[in-house]
Length: 199
Image (tube, rainbow, N blue to C red; front, side, top):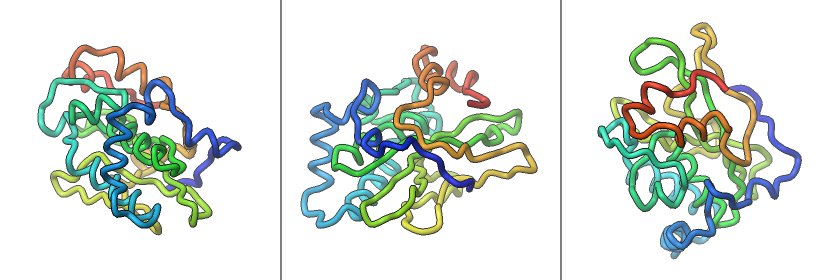
């Protein structure tokens, strides 16, 4: 993956907003549940990742027509595409005081026609001196994304020869192109036909 770039103020990666609404009672409740009995930030972050990856289905994997984009809605509805699941994980991490941001890849579409933007989360734990990307989209069909403190373990590795890439930026808020797509389409099928192809 490409070197990661981020905004100079780390405090931006703890902020709450309309999308990463970690002040919402549903997010706080989930964070408290995940954190009960957890002694350290790494364990909490790993547990939060597993929770989002494994208990919130990727809506396109299961044919769920609902489109979620706000972190609290992802947790309440228990569905979302990669961007939405990344919003939920980012909110859960920030709720525990862990720096987290959003990052993206450009990958070949699942049907092999064209390119689509894929959403991930970048995490920076207190003991780490760098951002490490995590991919909570969900493991189906042979995907084996895992939480990692070392080598990144995303669902897919970008292949430059196919014009795929890892965008190097870590965003404190969702990229406007991604958020516009999530908020513009009435159901998952329409969203799936109109996923962003680039940032």
